Length: 399
Image 1: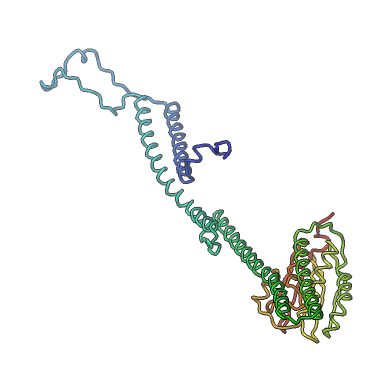
Image 2: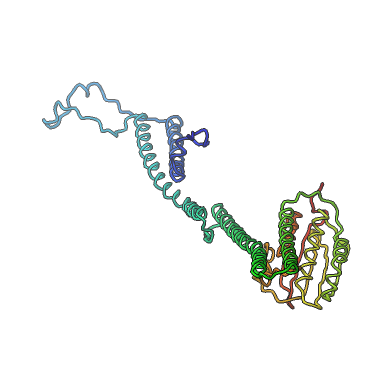
């Protein structure tokens, strides 16, 4: 059972709504200000002025003799008027009564106006609450888009809209990842099953055909192993714990280029490197993997006789590594999804050596753990341009 100590709120706070509390606050403020004003006026009228009331003294002889008048008035005493002012106390009493009546009217009006103002103030909160309930039920495609002055409530609604947009993108990415991963892992298994069924359906299959089947299954299985290892690399890059050190990015680029020289030569590609002395701070192992993935991606998704250009540019606060390659034209909407796992510019391909669609996702994860970014854009002549921005040593985390 939840108690008031557990929730951190008193029973009154749980019963009264925000609108009621605001209304009572306004009414209480009006009552307090009115009471202070009445007290000040009363004290001023009571003690500050010097009253000098002129009282006419009536001779004793006049009091003893009856005043001539109508016979009906004889023997009847005229009562004093309730508001008749005879003394200073009468003045103060009447002032106090009038002030208390005015205070009561002010409290009632303050409560009514406070209720209306509180309802207007919390109206956006009601809309935010309704949007939050829709989001809790799984609907993430709606936005508040509140208009009005740039105040705290509008800032809250804008933050809520950004949160909804981020959640919608995250869930959409997760769904695409699940679908793509299922397809990637199911296709090789389906291929293996088909090859086995075809071989078993042939009663005349000899040892040579069985050996050929085993070799093909081994190749498909190796492809599955490569995909799982790439997924493990992605998970490791996303959760890497860095021990940063100074890294010569130019030296890493040259090392990776030498490693990929045979692949580049096989496709008759031209590699142009414009790398000056470029340094950053981070993990040399992860950065080498990121650069290797970018260059491999530029080579594998290129046409024969194409070009690969690698440039570095040092800025005051960041280092930019640009890898551009020629190839087929890529639409912008497809470019925006290339950093997602298993995303490919021209559909899925299980051809050995064509990649598993995880290279750019790994680069994105590595850039993120280094406080950097990976930006992709289509090459106007066909192909892709990748910008890897990394912090300079002065901005990178220290040991």
